[in-house]
Amino acid sequence: MPHAKPARPKRRHRIVVYTFISVVLMPFLISAVYLFAFAQDQYASTVAFTVRSEENNSASDFFGGLTRTLGSSGGHDSDILYEFIQSQDIVQNIDDKIDLRTLFSIHKDSDPFFSFQTDGTIEDLTEYWKRMLHLSYDSGSGLMIIRVNAFRPEDAYQIAQAILVESQAVINDISATARADATRYTEEDLERAETRLREARQELTDFRVTNQIVDPTKDIEGQMGLLNTLQSQLATALIDFDLLAITAQPNDPRLEQTRRRIDVTRKRIAEERNKFSGESADGDNYAAKVSEFEKLSVDYEFAQMAYTAARSAHDAALGEARRTTRYLATFITPTLAERSMYPARGTILMLVGLFLFLGWTILLLIYYSLRDRR
Image (cartoon, rainbow, N blue to C red; front, side, top):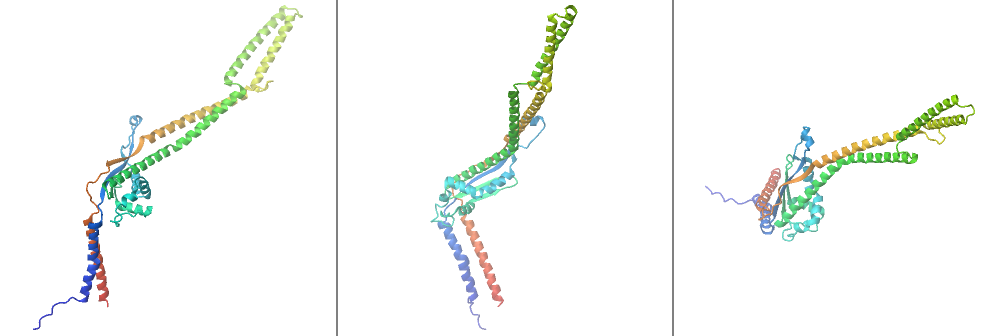
């Protein structure tokens, strides 16, 4: 019985081996050499914080039975901060202060894959920023944990500190905007009330200057006192005339003198009374003056009450805005690394090998599928 010939590798077997070497093994070895020979150590700095919105209750709120939640989480503010930390704005701001391009490109010649190239644009720097920044955010609690990588521990610490400063500035701007919005309408009402009060006061002053009267009602009281005096004098003169008519002779000069006194007094009383109807010779019209003065006084009093109400509303809105404050609660301050943790060479190499093997397997399956259809 003839013996079986030893198995010889066929063409398809050689293709499998060659493709495995070229597609999987060689890139894997190149990646390993780069990671362990050229990739520079990276140090991480961690900072964590949350946005808090605190409302301080006043004593009147407690006596009135009003309650507020203290230390409530500013969820919407945290969402804004989450987007801001990944934006081009914060990259530009921090780059202007500490020169991110230089910090991220100190190993651009020896480690071009993990380093930033200094000729990159701000958009390139923003994309690289997202590579060096690991942001963990819980939208429910508002907790935000940020890990910053850099090629030197002090650089990572400096960048983390800058992120904290920029985030605090954003929260301060949000608080300032919220306070401005809360008091904007009351400020507008207060300005209108002040203008109205000023105009009413000026109109009242102009009336007093024009008519040379501080208060027409006081002037009328004086005028009524004058009329009462004149009427009393008229009554006395009439009695004196009646007595003289009984005892004196018809051609007694005292009769004529008393009669003239009576006529002058009656004329004066008539002129004084005409001042109330506007028919006096000098044009005085107390009725019109009193009517105008009362109108101006009512306008002034109403403007004063409106101003007082607007001032109270503005002070209340301002006090409420000041009681409601937002702040950045930092529960992990920027850390200073003592040893390198990144890049995670073992993990990266395992992932590279896995994806290379999966890619090679898929290509091999496609090749045999096409070959079997022939």
